[in-house]
Length: 536
Image 1 (cartoon, rainbow, N blue to C red):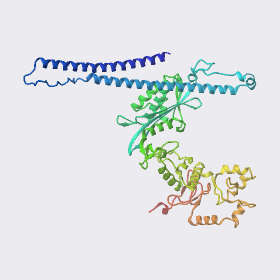
Image 2: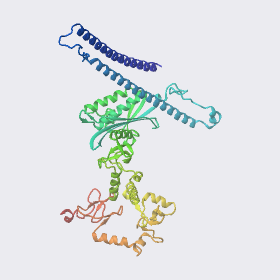
Image 3: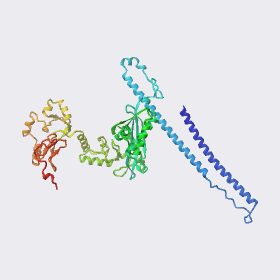
Image 4: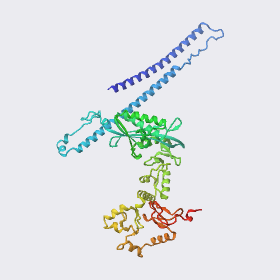
């Protein structure tokens, strides 16, 4: 009630000031007009009483007096502008407070409903049968339930996620630093309750804002929003270990600007009943990272006239072309944006070189999601290659196995295929038999050939049934002096360097005799040969 009265008083005061300034401006104009009329009458009367001999019978018309003092008019205009600006700022503040109040009410209602649902779930069945029809816990508009005098948000510990980003972007072929803040306030079960997307000055006093300062600015914004919502208990999450050390007083900031922001965070923490930091991985910052990127994107887009009317444009930092926002591709994880044409070429080149596609941004390691490839209209064969690359990267090199049927060649994990084979074949682990999970044919994991029924591995390898391709490979390996890793069976060729070999699986051995290489040289073989050391 008091707040409503205060808002009414402010509106009345603003209206009275506006009315008084307009009245003063009108009065000033009326006084000028009256002064001009009086001057004209005085000049006319003076000429009539003392006619000049050089004048003609009809005196020339007198020029109206125009005062040069416009100070009052300028001051009144400036004051009116100030009043209008203050009025707009006050209305914006009222809207912000109202939005925060609604978010808090929504938070209280959600916490109340979740608690009520848990209580209902835990009720004994007999009690529910007898009293379930009348069991209720109404939610009051002040945020308190009928069984509690406090609002839910005052008793629950809320989760605060903040992210401040500074990014080098291109706007109409001009490189510039752009900043964005993202804030997400979630309930104890990580359901989003309140969000903030805000632009941030990336350059202050001619210097680009550091990443640490951007993170701290975002945290200050988030804590202020939490206080606006009248939250009492908050845990704020940080994905920067150095900042976490600052918040826990384990490290003192060396930079004065960073120290000022850290002190500001400490002062805001004291405004809560409890407010503690928590260190998490970057991927656990939830929605805040996405909101910060969206704040940046809002600053690097602009409206342009097209044949279909106005559309939003954005500059791709690879080709520097002005592209429709709808034709820009955002990479999951880092949310860096590039035009679809450039991303298609980037993905194709990576795939053709046998590599998984990552974000092109310098230093970024985010992987391009396979589900996003339909946006690039890639050939089905390339998509299949990408699936294969992703699967290969997810299986350790020592655990990979391929189906030995050329028309299948499916990639599988040794552990996975063993468990699959055990369901249909007894003694699979001892015999080496494996059942392909794709074509469902059996093959031998020891001999790496289709399954040799009624023959052991030794009998098969000494028989003439051994594939010609395997015999040719072994013959070529013997001729070229290649060495086969005993751990993963990968064939290794020494091009240059010493005889100490480290296979791709991590196994180390002597290239000359194949003995395992441990702490010291395992055998009496020479360590190197000059022909492999001295290269032209």
